[in-house]
Length: 104
Image (cartoon, rainbow, N blue to C red; front, side):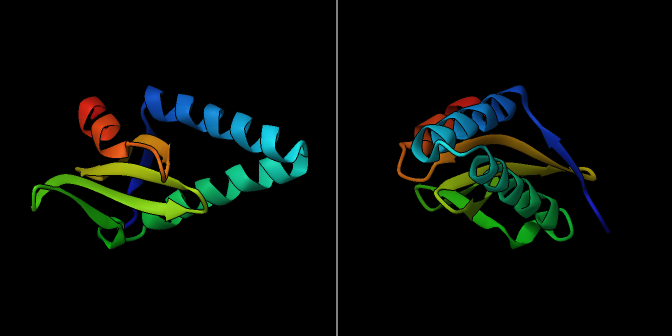
């Protein structure tokens, strides 16, 4: 079964932020576009079997949120019906627990 990939408005804003951060660091459009493509391709791949992502737990309890890591970012998602719903895409050294649990 293949799940449909859906991005929340916050995740789309996060993708724009990732693009800006990578471009600022690299100053190369091709590098930046390739970085974003790799991230989006990882998310497309997870749609084949979304439970392969890591489970996000808080105080040893599964939150219902999964995530994958791609380069320096984590993409957080839920599985609902036949959809993988990406809620946030955040730098992996950020305080992502507070950001993810507060927005999903």
